[in-house]
Length: 421
Image (cartoon, rainbow, N blue to C red; front, top):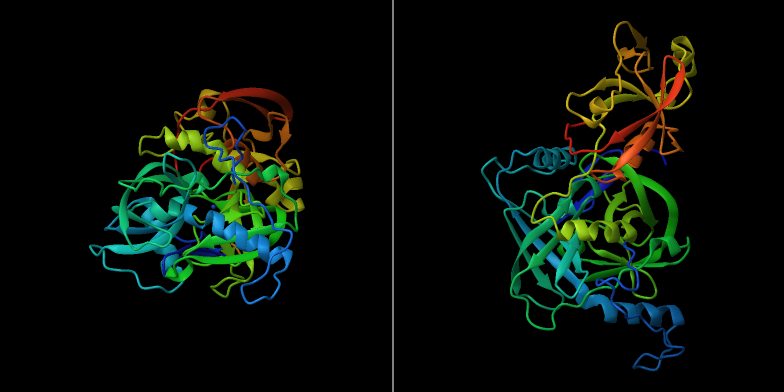
């Protein structure tokens, strides 16, 4: 995918962010095993034939869509947030994205509001939405489909690196919680139906339909903008759809709507992205146990250069391989430091990239060429593979140092430093 295209993050009645690259949807598929307590044993049955009240026949596809919407609409929730003055890194990023799209930024002490979408995932009333819908919010409220009554909600857990959050509302009436069953994103095929539900542009309950356009896309997801696998759909998703469900023809969740590709026009271009449902399934237990805090994800704690991004001339000059992550710096007290990985020192190579200022490159640092046997063909492979691990996991890095290869075991521990992996 061309990483210079614009993606838009959708929130409330304002488009909250878009950058040269990808952006988040507004303020995104989860697999559940048959014995999982979050599984809802219901499915949508497509009528073989039906008619409108006025006698006009519906197509089978129309009948299926109507059936899915009727059975799942009460699993959708509308989310409203109020955000006070916030100078956190996440809030600053969101304000920067707003500014890039030309939207007015309120004065520092003025509260900001936004809207988003979400959906029930279990009978306990847990609601999944995007992290960027609720992060930095001083107050969160929800409304149910077909109701104007609002209920206060609180954050149960957030996973900023996956742009997912779990919230729970207070005082919901009995019978109001209607979970949407979680599907399995490994069983999807390009061309299958995709139904998006949410509240785009603040319009309560809007449904759009399309297909799964691709299962081979990656996009920068979360606060660290790590490229992760996403589902591409042409079902219209717009500001306000963020955190809403993407359903299949059985009415099962297949994804969480999170981004659109704008093509530089600042609005939907018919290319939307959803976080796969299996990511939700994987993270749900951690979100439920987070106690209102952030789900930590691992980082090696290194600064590196993607060798595949260098020119052949520069690689040959420095006698570097065609692919791998060339470590420039190892940060103190990081998992990489504990494992004895080495950054670059001494003389550096000056890179002359057309249109950019010359940058120094230390060429004698360790080169990570694989993680647990999976080759690093580009820098994003390193970020993505590390992000897929959990705190406490031990991984085997294949490392090249001074022309010799060796395996290094690294135990992943909590470590946070901006722009590192």
